[in-house]
Length: 498
Ligand code: GDP
Ligand code: IMO
Ligand code: MG
Image (cartoon, rainbow, N blue to C red):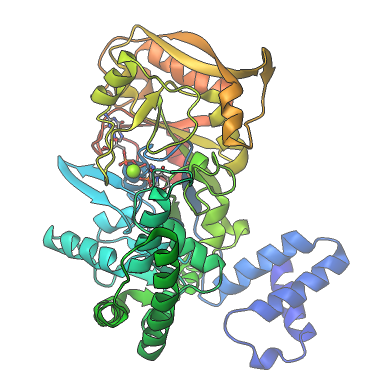
């Protein structure tokens, strides 16, 4: 009742309320002013926005939301977990990265590797959205769509890409290749997909967005100008061969035509879906330690992989995010260069790689392996606001009788809670390990927490105690079915228990 009165009051308070667009920006702002007078600005502002938007569609509550974020250096198993959540979440929205991601989903033995397309695509009743925070290579997108179609997956009418997402063009790959191999430059060990240079152009305000890709005149001018500039720079800096602007224009104009049916104002689509009571899972790519701000800079990707990116990368406000779910392996991996305090450079590391099949889903590169790093997991918890953890690949540790876990860092012999800001800062870090008892028995076919071996339950409880987050799901194999759901998590997220 109070909200209804406030909305009415806000409307009356706004001078031109009769001419307002259906999106209730002005009434909400006015109502916020009214509430501020009452000293309840944020609560009322939020409630009015949600209720107003929802009321106009005959609903009184918005759908629930959860962000899936990688808590390590990527490849934690996000793809599998998003797939499990889509049993009840109706929309999946990717918010960062590009086709540098490789998300593996295995359903009844059938393997899908998704790069740009969100995991929701594998359930026909789900809507999949590629948000504005993503950089899209149109040719890679069309290739992925074609292979999904060939596999019998529905992609028409349920897959949308943002008109505000940035476009990756061939000169981005040219610049990346040149810079990765240039003498004197730090080699990041990128995926060579043009991701970094595309984000550079975005922030430099000279990028091409999906809406511009569809504007053929603009596309031609953009490609001509950009090619002239990039060819000169790449030739001067890296002695690269020039790219042909005409050929590029023809290829991308053709791609634009094919992409057009997928393009939407996805911020509007997502906010409407929420107002209609639909639930959204925000699918992160990469991981916390690859985040442009919070990761092991400069050995990071170029986007906001952490949970904050879910808001900026989709246009859904941070106030509409209910839960952040961090995904961590039961151990640790990383692809590419950069610090990795708990890395194993010996036969044990090789053994983890083999048992965990730790080879890049997209590039096939061997992943570096190491023990679980709790200081980093605590850091990921803090940066992302993780309330639930999902522990994947528990089965990879099944053979061990003892499992070392990094429980703290020491610098110059003194314990520290700080994660270094500089990559070279990691060189001074000494990991403090604690040996946890292993369970030395198979877990792949176990479906409830109670049935897990005692030592495995203790391992998970130790992670909970050390991170302050609750373990809501445990993955003991790559297949959708090889999942253990914790009842509290199941009921909070509205999932079906197994
Ligand atoms: P993402 O990028 O976070 O989605 O992860 P990737 O798909 O790149 O890498 C995770 C790999 O581990 C994939 O090959 C998955 O099929 C596999 N995987 C996921 N969960 C489990 C698990 O619990 N056990 C095992 N053995 N493999 C898993
Ligand atoms: P998913 O979503 C693991 C790494 C690259 C490189 C660095 C920068 O599957 O977890 P980029 O091409 O992004 O400029 O490379 O980031 N990297 C990933 N590592 N999983 C990923 O994605 C990654 N995406 C990028 O290996 O070290
Ligand atoms: Mg991956």
